[in-house]
Image (spheres, helix red, strand yellow):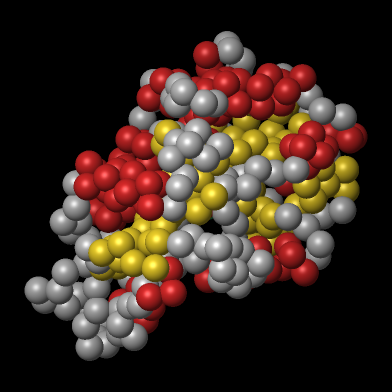
Length: 304
Ligand SMILES: Cc1ncc(COP(=O)(O)O)c(C=O)c1O
């Protein structure tokens, strides 16, 4: 499969506005509002051994994001799943251990004008790409993160295409040789990562910032459900940079990130370099619920 940039290959076939086309032929009009204004939403769903994990939860959030930007979706969940299935088939990924489904809707293409255009059909783009597991060393020992100010807008609960502050934060992390940037609000409170949620293990309890202007991550929800099922103490409460540094362990969560320990924060070791046994338990259970067979019942116990 051809390289498409950034050292990434394929996918061979993608979906764009009703058609399955070769990746190189998927073109959107120059005045698509996603391109001009970031006027759209997206989702990323991971398929484990061919089965989507947390499909309904992702679709709940997709529909909430659409409602949040007043975008009427002409597609039903079943239509979207069918597109994903067809992409699996056409790209030979029906039983791939990991495959990541990217779904994006914009308010469509119209002559540039800020207010919504009348009578324009939203645009839909989807692709399915083989997923990459994080190297085992990273999953065990963790990654470096830095802190940057959280400069985003007031609707970070919506998964919109407006990701410029996230992009700038991630680039700062990359420039610093780190994996992720934690976004920090006034008072030293951490909201989330540029593309992940954040947790700390404090005195054996699982602590994560509350759903106040952060993305309600599906992996975050899964981890909370696992922790509750394991009868671990769970707190959704404000979390400071200092608490993360002093925590027994801290970690990031995300659909493609899964559960990734934080090794250092701004160059300082988190948890004196030791792993909390709670982190081991959560990673082990997470692998179980996402594992082949698509046993995502835990994720269903509590919706966003
Ligand atoms: C800002 C932000 N927070 C959190 C997450 C994690 O969400 P999920 O677990 O649903 O992938 C993401 C995922 O991309 C994100 O972009």
